[in-house]
Every structure is written in structure tokens, then in C-alpha cells.
Length: 186
Image (tube, rainbow, N blue to C red):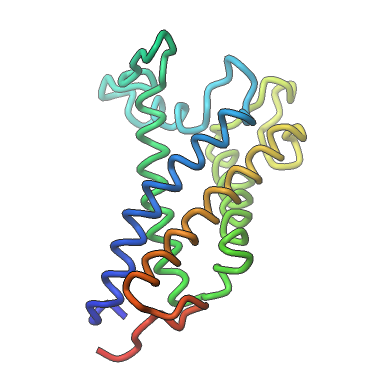
């Protein structure tokens, strides 16, 4: 797959455009449906504090004030970087497992929610909801508001990556369905 320039263009452009647009979509979905209660640290904030704290960098190191509102800069950057990384995984994964594009990419968002918020984040100890009385934030311990917000937010986010991929495929005059876009010979 990597030997073909057209395949590389699809991967690079979908990663860049899909990562950029999807980060805005995910961030925007959390404005109208915040996944956490006020005052709770987000998993990205907890990760930054745990992994980079020894360097003197924490979840508030890049905060800035915009029109009187404090914006968590480091957490925003973290989400942006993850959007680019997961857009890359999506487009490359679609070349090998085209089923990931099911429901315009919504399947990918569901998988990411289950794997990240249902398994990895609680396994690493980065989610202990205030309302769960000390319990780890496994999916079954999350309240309906947080669960709904995470699932919908990741579905919106992953569908936006798919829409960007469709746009890139259209611009490059590649087939839009499944893995038909992949040029299998060099």
C-alpha cells in the first residue's frame, strides 16, 4: 500500500483534513453535552499531569483567557493531536479492514469509545467520576449523561473523519466505498 503515491496522498490528506475538522467537531460536541461534571479533571488533563508533571508541565500550563473564559490549552492541544492520530489510524485501517467505515465511520467512533473510555482510560486509573462514589470509571459505572455524551461525541467525531475522507477521495478521483480506493499494485 505504501509504495503507491496515490495511497500516500489519501492517507496524508485525510489525516490532515480529517484530524483538523474532527478535532473541532469533538470539541464542539462537548460544549452542548459536557461529558463530565464541573470541577472534574478530564482524562487528557489527568494524563498530562501524570506523564509530564515531572517536567514541570501540567494540564494548565497552556491555559489562556479568551473573552473572559479560561480555555484549557494543554487539554485542547492533546485532543487535537489525538484527532490527527486517530484520523491516521482510521484511514490506514480502512485500507485493511473496510468494515471500519460502516455507518459512515460511526462504527469507528463506537469502537474508540468502548476501547478508550471503557477500557484503557479506567485501566490506567484516569477516570474516577465524582458521582460514582470512588468507583473506577468503567462504562458500566458511568452515569447516562457521561455515557451518552462520550458515545455521541465520538460518533460525530468519527463520521466527520469519514466525510473528510470521502472529500479527499473525491478530489483525488478515487472510489468512495470500502477499500476500493486502495491501489494494490506499486
